[in-house]
Each structure stands twice: as C-alpha cells, then as structure tokens.
Length: 289
Image 1 (cartoon, rainbow, N blue to C red):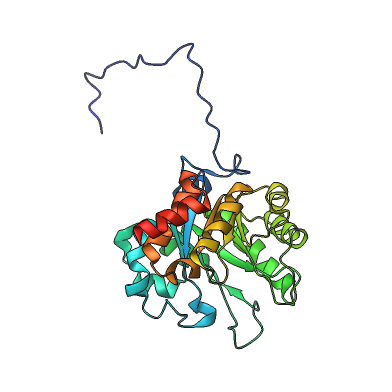
Image 2 (cartoon, rainbow, N blue to C red):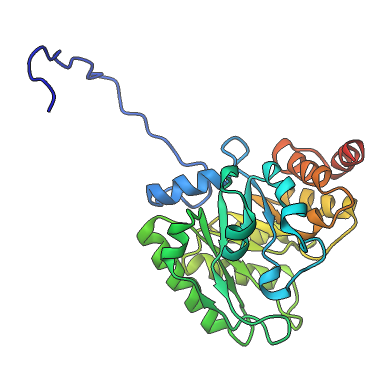
C-alpha cells in the first residue's frame, strides 16, 4: 500500500479546459466498442484509413495452391510488407512466426472443398480466436447460394461472439458460378453482411457502379484480388477500387503468384496508401523487380 505520508495534493484539473472529443477514423464504427476499434486500428493504417491485407487462406478449400506449396518460402518473406494477414489457424500455428506481430484476419469458417459444393460451412470456437490473438474473424457468406441461410446464421453468431469479446467480424462475400458480380448483386451482398453485424466486408470489384456499392455499405469495404491477373491489370483493379471508395485490398494470388511478389506488394501499397496511379505503380513494380 502506498505510503500515506508526503503525498502531493492533486492540482492539475484543467479547469475551464473542455474535454477533447475524438472521432474514430473508420466508416460506421464511431459507436463500436473500444476493443473492436483497437483491433481495427491494427488492421487499417491510421494515416490513410486503408489496409493492404495479404490473403493466403486458399488452402483450406483448395489444398496446396500454386505459390502456397511452401508457406515458409513464399509467404513469410512477404509478411513485413503487409498491413494484415488472412490465413487459417493451421497455417498460422505451423508456418507463421509469432515474432512478426502482424494483425491476423483469422479464417473463422471451415467446410467443404472444391471437390464438393462450397459454403456448407461451420464456424470455429471463439476461444480459438482469443488464443490466437486474432484481430478479426473472417466468415464466408453465400448470398444467393444454396447455403445462404446457413452462412448468414454463421455470420450472425460470429458477430454476436465478436461483440461480446471485442473482436471484429469480416464478412466475406462468396460468389458462385451462377451469380453475376455486378453492382446490383454486390450492393445486396455487402449490405446484408453489414446489416447482420459485419464490422467490415470483403467483396469483389466491378467495373460499373462500384462507387454505389461502397456508398450503400455502412462499414468499410476491402476488395478481393480474385484470380491471377497480369501485374499491370491487378494494379489497375486496386487503383479503381480505391478511387471508387474502397478502404483497402485483400490480395492473394495477384501477389504471391506475381513474377516478383515483394515488388508487387510494395506497388499495391503505393496505390492504397500513397495515392499512386496504376501506371505509376506498375513503373514502381518494374523498378523494384
């Protein structure tokens, strides 16, 4: 117990100085709990308000995808250049050094593989997310698919657990082959995720009307990289998405399958955080390469 003798009287009360009011910098999260905001602040750069996430969770449905055969050789050298990483718990424990201290977007659902119909998924126990110090829990949501109701239920349950323990929920919109990735569909899918509790949403970019998709979603949107594109085209997609209001990108194959993955992720960061055009970023990529 502190010695009660010799204590100095408190006198720095700041009388007549109003208490400062700090506004949170990410869209739609002004009233989120402190823990949610703290974890989101790890994922999203506080100066740009955006993020470059590196996704390498493909193996949970696709097995050893090209470029992910040896995570220790292909992905670990890229970690320092990403704002956040998105992966499964198995890869996190077996391959990712905990000394990197990157915010983790934990793949929080698991289920069928590409050998079966996708999205018949279950979710992981929230205790696992806490043990792994996850900065968010990523849930696949299949709007318009066979398992729509089940995946929305997974999202709702995950958001409930996330709000209880202060862990954000990332709603990941899954688009089957029978659905069109246009603004009408993406607006529906992202809005449904947000309405059901997603703290932020990952979806695909569309050429026409993406600014309307972003405007109609009350929480931040990051875009998925999707299939492998030539490096200049992938940078163009990133540039257009950011220009249309996206809060970041979550790229996988367009980074780790690039001719020079380190140069590519640096070029993507230059688009997202530094405002480079796709042409300038491609020049940077070639210089770094």
